[in-house]
Length: 155
Image 1 (tube, helix red, strand yellow):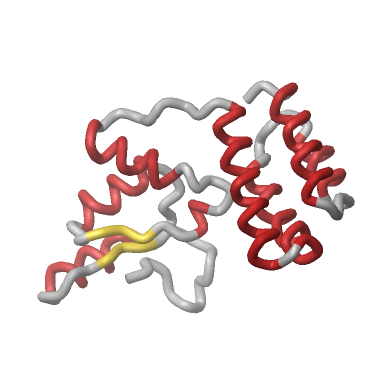
Image 2: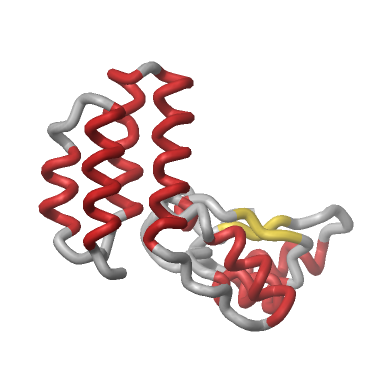
């Protein structure tokens, strides 16, 4: 169950109370969804609603590591170790490669632009790098640019 109405779309806060009430009245598994942006949100959703599971959607855009972080937090009650630039870059390169393999270079690179804006959100000079990335048309140049950026940027 998503804790927002259709009219709210992506605005507003997730109504955990409605998920909790649903879980109390039905006999089938309930999966809670909405506003899970980090491991603490996931734990709160599970503990408060008693849902059988959670679904993470927009919180994973640009942060596929959220799944690793949630599992670690739920198992140990500690935050996962921060990823290094090289670990993040390795994931991005895999993402680019999969996108280009699936969609071809022209479409794949263009579709990656939106993902890259999320991957780099909040990083130093991210606005400038995103503006430049939006002009790149080849996988090779994109990977070269991102490698230089991640090797010279402190996160």
